[in-house]
Amino acid sequence: MRTVLITGASSGIGAACARTLASEGNYRLLLCARREARLLELKSELLKDFENIEIHTFVLDVRNRDEVFDRIENLPAAWKNIDVLINNAGLSQGLDAVQDGNPDDWDRMIDTNVKGLLYVTRAVTPLLKQSQNAHIVNLGSIAGKEVYPNGNVYCATKHAVDALNKAMRIDLLPFGIKVTAINPGMVETEFSEVRFKGDKDRAKSVYHGLTPLSGEDIAETIAFVLSRPAHVNINDLLIMPTAQA
Ligand code: NDP
Image (tube, rainbow, N blue to C red; front, side):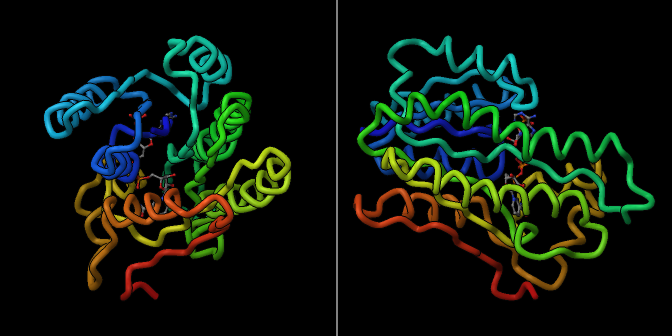
């Protein structure tokens, strides 16, 4: 039985990872995000669907450094044996040319996607070092491999995740901790609605002419990555909708 901590578990890819890993029957789930009601809803759904599943939820804003270290340090003793960390919490806010961008949007993306991922990783690695089967999965993006019009700061944060993924792999190699970046193209989640600040029509329009990936497509890929034997690590994986250029 492995214990997995998923950040940003209240929706989209994070929630899909919780469902998929619950269905595998060999994971205990530590789920966190800012929206407590959504976490509790997911927990009761999973408890109904999967007999004997163990789940612990807690509220966490990954941008808040003190909160991150405090929440991890004060996890109940039975939940400190973390084997897998899925650094999933992230967002894109706005899609503007750099000369027109809103610095508040930039701060939010950098604080969540880069600094938040670093804080959680720093807080959790001492626990991962105790595991015989430790793995960190970082949610990057195609935006961490390429740059597209008006994607400037979001792309920069995901390029940073790409660099951090490589750096973590090197630094954690002596401890046998696997590190993997999962880099999706378009996934239909609440991501697009967050990006366009609640404008549902604009959010939907980005999927026009193609079938986007689902959260489950990414979750199944992560479950596969986590299930590889001890000597196999998938370092970096790009997963795209077939019709996305
Ligand atoms: P969602 O908007 O559906 O989910 C994002 C999750 O991140 C939510 O659970 C949200 O929870 C959480 N989150 C956001 N800010 C914070 C914060 N400050 N502290 C803690 N949790 C936070 O989008 P996705 O599921 O699509 O996104 C998941 C990851 O996948 C992100 O890193 C994203 O960049 C990446 N990605 C997504 C793609 C897509 O097309 N959807 C493509 C490529 C990568 P809450 O609001 O409750 O805190």
